Image 1: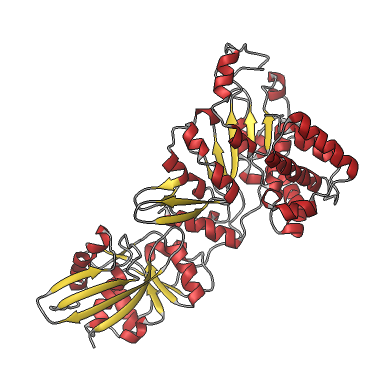
Image 2: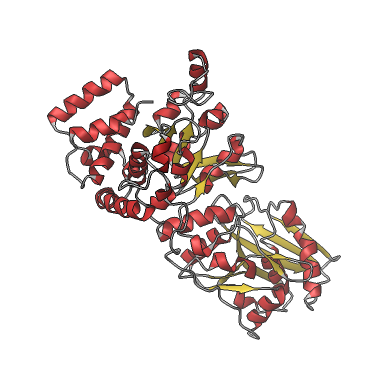
Length: 499
């Protein structure tokens, strides 16, 4: 029989659909055809595979070789199918045993020498193979990434010859070494470096407990960027499932994963000149953008009004849904985008409106034009807006006070307060749905009447009505997890919506 089948995985967003690589040898003039909607890199595999097989001391069949990548309607791209195609040809020609291919999946690009090169998207493929209970063979260059997935048998190899030797039973393949499941000790920027700014520190803690979006407004040099950079240090570490999903996005984007830091929450800070495609993802072969690379972490947008209005508007949907769908003519890919937005901006174009030490030179029209670059619907999705004023120099030079806590102290308090939300709904307060909101944010008659009057006076939307309740629920959790929201919780939550 001159037919052999090997298994591999394609790359489609962070999904990894199975691909059956069917190889058939028949009579006729020697030729190799690859069918099944292959992109250019896959079509070129016939030359890489032929030379790699010859340089590995195997015989390339002098017959007509037909390679079918099924399912036919799924586009295939990249060099990830080189190894399964080569093994299928060798199995169809009787040079390696066919039966050893049944319960194993293969990923890897072949060099002309027969050595294996790394490929992107290994982590999603391993997660899907684990669900099927199959073994996986990957290049040694992907070993660190493969070590993150437990309960799946992974083998790493340097060359086609090693894989063939393993299939023949002549040698064994190594397994990737384990990683630190705790992800090590956090060694990033510490909140202790920030002097003063008690209101901003309070808002940062509320944002960390509830997963709320935050806007920092203040003159240049007042510590807005310092505060934003220290938010990941007070957030809870990623759970194993969250960490694997976050690393899967990095894998699809072709970015390396540091095994010592894989449980750290990502922090992405794109420049204000970034395009909409850079932010949400795209390309002819869709790749994740900054909002997906910040999945389960923090997306920091400094100088928010300097971003293109079109770029900012594309954030509105993923802020609500937690994912982004990138549609192109040939395919459609869905990427996760459950990020926490932290934005910073100046109060005016010159940056000194309200600064007691420098006089603002902007006219009211210039200030209005500057602030109107950010649309109302986008601002409505931001839960907390806090002023970061300039501090007197004597406070900057003073010794640290009792309120200048380090990140470890604040993180311990954040973990304790977030535990209340996790016990109630299993997720942070910013992510609870309307039914959970009605259940967990109960108001007494007096508090509800006062709250409705305040909303009417401030002219807040229905979306703001629910978002303020979520922030008030978070404040109550910080104060001990009271079952019923008090007026002081609502009042503090309302003052953070003074946009």
